[in-house]
Image 1 (cartoon, one colour):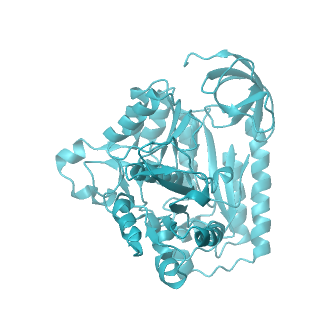
Image 2: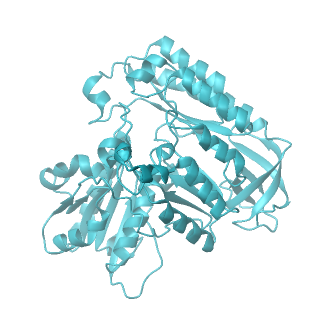
Image 3: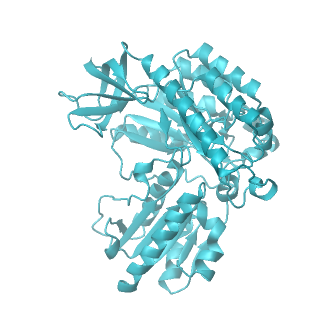
Length: 487
């Protein structure tokens, strides 16, 4: 199964740039238009921003022309995302000519990197706000209301927004994301995240449980615990992950790691489906896999990016695991959770990659036979270690050919994996109508594979047992056998 090769792993193409819309609060007299680009962390952050600004007198609107404040939540992962945002900012400035009172702001990952360019050189925005500064929005808005440019891109050591209840935007009312960490300490040479989102810190588990319980009360049936690297979640009373060694003995004894958090959430809401993303092979521990096997409501699916099958390239990427250690982890997952689905991220054409390195990637894929994957040709990002230290020396046509070979192999494996579901009865959570047929529901099984089946009298949010009759390399097709015990 192929997940868009152009974009970063959790980037949903269909969501890009969609404006948020919330219920109106009659007391609010100003209009906020907010668009999000990039990964689910950004969409989750936009919900936090909308929640903060709702208290400052703003209702969301989907009509750009009537907005008092226009915000773009940006992404630096790929060049394409940056180009899209620039075009949008040009469009907003054209609208500004007819609505001179309108203010434009840039939020998120591009804010940190391009603040002076946007504000001083190109003068295309009034406000630039980094991912850790959203609580400062009321002050920044006051600044721009008084005619001054406003900037806050300071990266924080402790901001997790654990005390801000996000407003659920553009949601299907069934699935929701719950942020558990911010930032990342892994300095992979190809990645901008540590520079745009700062050092890693974890959110208080109590605030996570409260958010999950609140979502259940409001009818949500599935949550995804979200972080740049969820496996390194570690709460010991606040502070940066890297400072844990300085914690007191008491703090260490009462600390909560990711496996514990997963169990706490699973036990708090035994009928709520739980997923998590993204995992890092070097940080994933056996206790996480054991927690998954122990609790039925934790989905049997792990997104386990590897990026390359070559030890030499993994080292150049500063991935802190080897091919052999990755295989050991895969073997443990297969042993403890035999029916677990595993997906990958793969980069083709990383600097210095040889044909032999590329063959190592293909042989790793043959070993794992991933259920699906997110595959890209390497593109250099300014500010990363790779951009500073490695020449982007693989010709474009070589990158494209290697990517094609990776995609073709993944398609073969995707079909092999979906075929294993045929003939089985599997629990599916109904998320909405199928994109291709209004007469069919679409949902996902525990392994995160899309399942479609005739609607009959089932509803969005139902857990339905579905008999799988046929499949493509990406989708399972079946018929309902009745509601499952989890309704």
